[in-house]
Amino acid sequence: KQDADITLDDCLKQFSSPEKLGDGYKCDHCNAENTTSSAYDVWRLPDILVIHVKRFVYTMYVRGKLNNMMKYPVNNLDMSKVLGKAAADFDPNRERYDLYGVVHHYGTMRGGHYVATCKNESPNQDGKWYTFNDSRVIELGENQEVQSSGYLLFYSRKRMSAHNMINLNPPVID
Image (cartoon, rainbow, N blue to C red):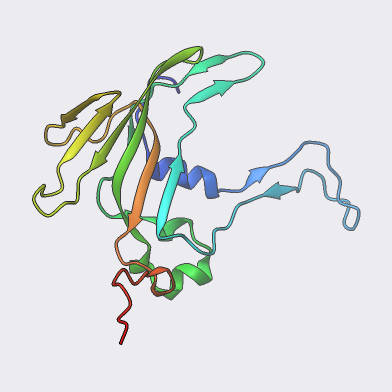
């Protein structure tokens, strides 16, 4: 619906739910009709997760940008819900993410402007959020990270995977 608020959880549930593939299909083995479906299973997640939210609709009847307010968590996005059962049972607390950046699109399907908001994790910044709009950088007020214009969401895993850790210390040479 064009004016209904949605959540990122709604989108993730729809992404991982089975989709009926076609009418009129008949199974060669059992002769059952309309039994085909497809579903996505995610078995492993990256330490840096980028979620692209579909903000444009293009069909035979409708073309345009969706401006629904989508609520997405800033902290503790739980991705264990989209994992295959065996992977989720392994360690569900490992699949939690925090938002650190968003790309926004302002405008229409025919044109517009892109702006980024990012969290500054520098020790003296205390996790403040900033908007980067061309040559202007503006500090965001409290709770302004979530906006209806967001369509690319950047999350980092709260507990990094051991196989992705990088030793940033220079090597010691004797």
